Each structure stands twice: as C-alpha cells, then as structure tokens.
Amino acid sequence: MVSLKVNLSGLELSNPIIPASGCFGYGKEFCDYYDINILGSFCTKGTTKDSRFGNDTPRIAETSCGMLNSVGLQNPGINHVVEHELKDIASYYSKPVIVNISGFSIEEYEYCVKRLRGIDNVGLIEVNISCPNVHNGGMSFGTSADMAAKVTKAVVKAADKPVYIKLSPNVTDIVSIAKACEDEGASGICAINTLLGMRIDIKKRKPVLANITGGLSGPAVFPVALRMVYQIYEAVKIPIIGIGGISNADDVIEMMMAGAAAVQVGSMNLVEPYTCKTIIEQLPERLKKLGIDDINKIIGGAHK
Amino acid sequence: MGIYTIKEIKQLTYDTYEMVLLGDTSWIKAPGQFVNIKIDGLFLRRPLSVCDIEEEHMTLVFKVVGQGTEVMSKMKPSQQLDILCGLGNGYDINIETEKPLLIGGGCGVPPLYYLAKMLIKKGRKPSVILGFNKKDDVFYEDEFKALGCNVHVCSVDGSCGYKGFATDALGMIDYDYVYTCGPEPMLKAVYGKTSVPGQYSFEERMGCGFGACMGCTCKTKYGYKRICKDGPVLFKEEIIW
Image (cartoon, rainbow over all chains, first blue to last red; front, side, top):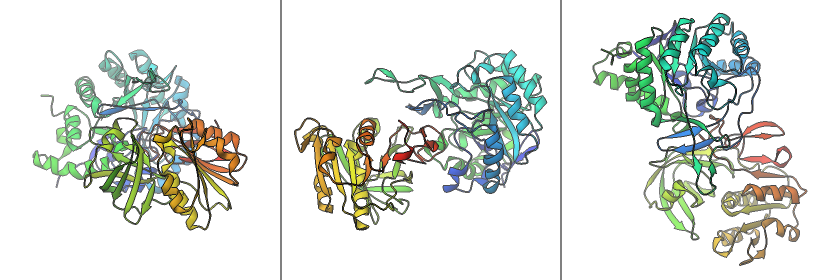
C-alpha cells in the first residue's frame, strides 16, 4: 500500500493533488465529471476585496503545448465569496479548501484575509502577488523582495490560517523573493504563476488577447516551474506547492523530487476535466514501480 | 461525453464539412448546445455546435477557419474523437410562440437545423432565413426544406436567393419570435431590426467550455455570464451590446 498523504503546515491532505486557482472555479462544474472529494484539496478562483468583471474578451489564446489567459481576476468579491461560494462549497466538498486572494494595496490583502477568519472550510490562504493580468497591482507586489515582504508581513499578522505566498516567475531572482516571504512569516510558497506572453493574429495584424498580453500556462511551462521550485527548495525551509504545466503522475513525482510538498494542477483541468482524478488513480502504481511506499520520501529527492 | 467514432464525413461546400459521429448522444438536452473536441497536437479543445442528433448519431457541420477545423476536415471514417458533450444551455423551445423565425448566418446555420426539427416536433411551422455571402457558401437549404420549413436564402452579393443580408429578408416574413445564430454583426442587426422577443446564440473564444475558467464571460442585464455555461444562448432582453 503506497501512502499519498502529505501535510501542509498542519493541514493533512489525503494526496498532494490540488487543482490550481482559476482553473477550477469553485469546484462545482467538475462535480458533473467526478466526485471531487477525492482531491487532496482545491484552490478557489482568485478573490479580491471588491467584485471584478476582469478584462475584455478575447481572454484566451492558444499556443504550442499551452495557452495564454488574460481573465483579469473576475470574481464576485470577498464578501460574496465568504457568504455564498464558501458555504456552497461545504455542501459538495467535505474537506478544507485553499482560498486564493489578491489585492491592489496592502490594505486590500489584509481585508480579504481578515474576512476569512474563523471559517471552518478554509484550510490555507494562498496570497497571489503574481497575477500578470491586472494593472497597478497583482504582479507588482511579487516582483520585488521588499514589496513581497511587506504584503507577507501584513497578511500573516491578519490571518488565522497558514498563509502561502504565490510567486511570479516574471522576475530576475525568484529565490530572493521566496526568502523574503519566509523571513516575514509565510507558512509556505506556491510557485509558479503564469509567464507573461502574447500572440498576434496575423490576418488581423493585432494581438489575439484584448488585454494584449496574458499569462502562459500548460505543459510548455513545466520545465521553468520545475527549475524554480528546485531553486527555491535549496533556499527555504517552508513547504513549497509546485505549480506549472503538470499533466500526469510522472510530472507530479518530478515536481516533488524538485522539492514540492504538494502540487497544483492548472490548465490541464480545462482541456481534460478528469486530469486530477486520473493522476490520483495512477500515482500509487507509478510510485510502487519506482519502489516508493510513502510519497513524502520523494520530496526534494533530487537534491543530493 | 467520451469517445465518438466518425461514421461519415462529407464536403458540403468548398470550405464546409458535415461530420456524422457515432456515440452517446444522451448528454445533449437542447438544440443550440455544443460539444468540445480534443484534437491531437492542439492544446485547447475546439467547440462546435451540434447540428443534429438522432439516436446514437450526432451531426456536426463546420467551416474550415483555423488549425482545428483544418485537421478535422481531413479526418476519415472510423477515426475516434474525444469529445465533451452537451455543453452550454441551448435554446429554450418551451416558449409559447406561433410563428417562430430562425435566422442563421454562415457557420451559425447548423444549430438551427436541430432547433427547427424540435420546433416542428412541437407542432410549430418555423420560417427560416439562411444568410450567406455568396452562392458557393450555401449549405443545408434542401435539408431545411425537407423538414417542412418555409426557407428564404439570402446572399450578400446576390448570386443566389434574395440579394442582401439576412435581416433584409425580414419584411417578407410573418413572425412573432426569433431564434438566431451567426456572426455578432448579424445578431446585432437582427436585434435592431426586429421588435419581437427572441433568443440569440453567441460565440466567444473559450478555454474550457464548461464554465471553469471564466475565459468567455460577457456582461448581460442579468449579470456576468459565461458564454460556455450560462450561454451560448441569451434572451434578447438581457443582451448588452
């Protein structure tokens, strides 16, 4: 019997598979395809203090082995999420979820985190300082160690749950930012968010996305994500959730060997809604073939 | 949902193809719903409206407009496709109307075929306007006629049928309700030139096709709606242009 159980800052997960924010809505749509209670947890759609429509459409563009999105944090606002979505989730998902929050000022981040206090089905808070699709905010907090430290300090103080900071790959030195978050009390690091990119429609001679640029995700980014998780693992002691282009059980194993304590699966959920279910079913067999009886034993296994 | 086998594929015009698939069609609950097709080598699935279903058979009619439809046009019978089925809300056919008018423009024509069939099943006799750019683009005129619809073909260049846009033929028809699907400028023209209520099917670039990614959201008078999940069909009264 292979054990898939992992622990994120005290939160026990039956397996390390977590659908990523923005690729799973609030989970409800996936209930049409499988019982989502098999998931270790799931990460909710990014939430801001006030409701947001997001960017104009087209918000989606295709690319080789991946996609670009510029949704721009469409969400109903933290109050609505607390009063409706989180309560709804409890009716079809019995485990704690990871709530992803974002902001345009440190006060907005604090507000969201405070609003999440005392809610039973919030397991962790994922603080997005890396959204590439909103202007004057989002990613700008994640591109300097100073700003990342300030946000982290504020949210850690305001939260009653472990806080994980989700980092942007669109930086020169992700390691120094991860360390700054750890120094200010973050319980963990999520890496990575999408890479900034664009496509041009050659017939129309203009960018495909209404927002011009968007975030690249999908299998195309897996090696970049893996490299960054590997580097962060060498520098910090707190757990890392590995995110970026994961599409099968072997990718999960690779990401955990790079140093991830759990993983998030993003875009693959959109093109194959059964991806997480398939991974959870195939992981024990893959681990067994590799002679591994406890998945925790592979975390950081590539660093020796 | 699942794996579907191509039974036949037929070229209807120089760029439009009809594909008949064999598989479980029970997922499809309403005309105007769509399917999302996995194509080897392409990351995103390709959404296509359902043209017809009959027992285990599902018919898709598509125009070659890009990489995905190009690959599909070259597929052969017995080839298998991974398809997410029965997506979107589809047309509500329980609205009480006596004289429904169906207006389709170009690639917007296919979903109206199954809609016409269902309306006829409910005892209505739909009028249909099929709008195309030119004679070579016309498809399904005979199929709609064979159902017993009152069919008006329009072509922008006048090479066949009534010369003009689909909306230019409105004056010839007695109708009390509109069901439409086609390019957005056509939908907008229908909206402006008709005074009756109706249902309008929209198109948008999609990520997932089942409501998870918020890639295709639009603003309506009833709030933000995902074209893939809360649409693609919107009621006239909720549309914001």
